[in-house]
Image (tube, rainbow, N blue to C red; front, top):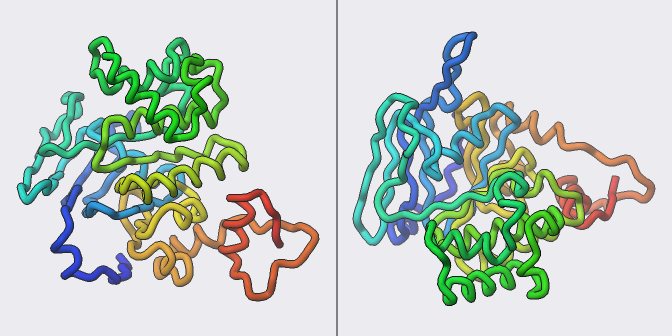
Amino acid sequence: MNIHREEDAMAQQDRERLVELKNVVVEFESSGGTFRALDEVDLSIWRGDHLAVVGESGSGKTTLGRVLVGLQPFRGEFASEIGGARSALTPARTSRQRRQRVPGDISIQMVFQSSESSLDPRWTAVAAVAEATARGKRPSAAQRAEAERYLTLVGIPPHRHRAKASELSGGQRQRVAIARALALKPDLLICDEATSALDVATRASIITLLTELKHDLGVTLCVITHDFTTARALSDTCIVMKSGRIVEQGATAQIISNPQAEYSQQLLAAVPRLQVTGPRPADEPLMSALDRTILTGQKSD
């Protein structure tokens, strides 16, 4: 495995390690035999990190996200350090244990790719957010007020707070999903391809929103994506996954500008190059031009 070693070890000592995975393995049984979705993965996420997990379909990145949020049984060790106390979870090996938990007092929430499947279409936006904080009970007036605050924070106008999920656009539903996750005050927010199903303009607005939230709220962010431009917009550090393994990790900008793993080079080479009129400025790097194209809709060659 090729690794960019840019982290300052002394600086890390002053931060909390929210996630420490060691030798994590996830396997699925099928008619063709055993498929290893995660293959002895080691990973640390520190409070304040903005991490991207990049890879093509089948690389294991979504399975990794499901392990982090407590939805996927696994073998190995999952530990966290909150407030100076370390707690570890070493789950059973069988996939029969469906109610996995994350260690200690850490709170991890996930925003999924499809807001249609994660939101009840019959519920209003405010009900969807308030219900999450009420944890199965009837939301109080204070919880509903807090839900409205988070909806406003993510850009849902007050006159849409009582619209049903089925009446909202795809971008608005994704904002509601983000508000619901934030209302639970997570230590770590995971976004699993949260913008990939959206049109270019809506995708740009959600990326802008997440950028603002990570700075304004201090949210530690883990972005799961197949797209290096999204990774560059939202992350400082990056891991590249292939066939359930981490093949490269380091600063996002450094991996994009100087990828060491052959697979990372292949992913970057696969980024489409648009054929349009008007030259790209000579001093503008290709990835910068692609960022501008995808995030704003402005085209460049």
